[in-house]
Amino acid sequence: MRRIGFLSAGVLLLLFSTASIAQADNSTTQFQTGSWADATGYYFAVRYRGNKVPDIQVRIVGRVLEIVIGQASGMPGGFFANRMSQSYPLPMDADPSRMRRQEQPGLVLFRIPRRQVS
Image (cartoon, rainbow, N blue to C red):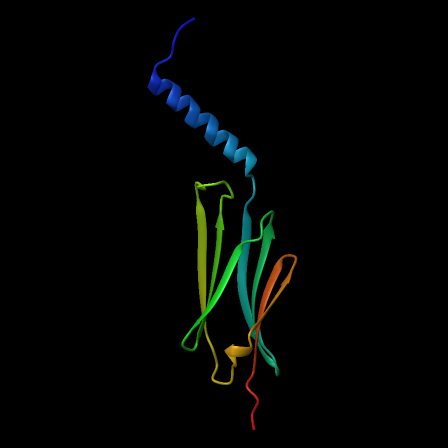
């Protein structure tokens, strides 16, 4: 039986690990963002399709709503990460302190009501 060197064994292990991870985590998620308004408020949607729900974070900076969407490989110490952010200026009558998040399969919706006009 022929022995293989340390470097050759390392390369074989790396190839096997990469193939196993690709098979074990065969999940990708596609997502898109959109916004609209009606008489009651402003809506910001993240639609996604795939096996994994993306990580969706929202923050308000001044009068801007920032939506950050991320996805990792799902494996400990993942080999890739996908991140996208979208910023939306908020109209003056938007009340971000009353923002609500609603989740449904394939959709995460953020609603910001309009301020009450007195």
